[in-house]
Image (cartoon, rainbow, N blue to C red; front, side, top):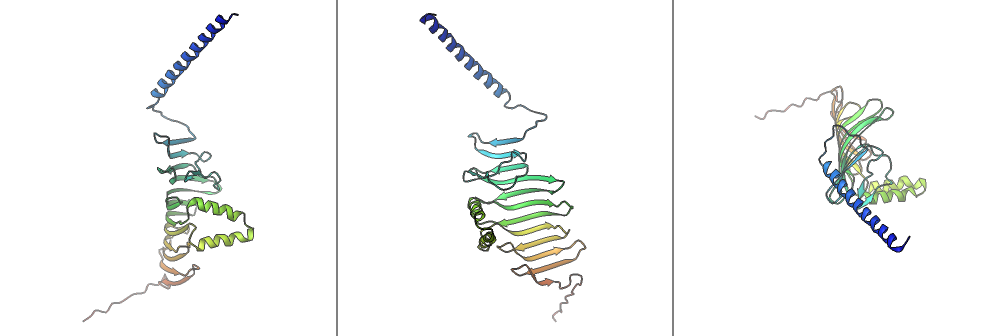
Length: 251
């Protein structure tokens, strides 16, 4: 085969490759344009990422296996403990997770649902929740939390404490809790596990200090508690007895 024939065949191959590339590009463009506003009656999918035009992630709808583990300051929490339930995760302009809506249930572990709103660079501060045990008892209501340590710092502390001798780990966590750095539930309102309607106000360590309660039988009570959550004063002293307060009319 002479040199000119080889060069001719190479030119033909190049032209063919160029034409094939252009044709594929046109076809893909037509296809994607055609499905841009496509409507489906039903679709099965494990995960959907909602992104801005620049590709920035703003929302994830996912099953449990493919659920997003969360992101803060550009760091994805791949080592986050526990599997996250299926649901929707929301992300802010800076890429940080800002809240989520999840539901989960298991025959051997109860079921629940939760809508949460996260603090900047932190975890959930407001939570609407249904938490049901396997025996059917449940809490349904609102929780408000206080968290003062950025989530990345908390996860780093978690790793540090995990490397300590086991007998030192509890005291390390207690120290952080006493400093008010860990997440603490500050307010709980709703129907409690014992079917009482409750309002519990807590201190910075998450200890109940004031409790308003109406029990399932209609018995109402107000409890004041000390820092060890021991009741130090109640109104009325016997919630089944009502104290009549008489006001003397001034003459």
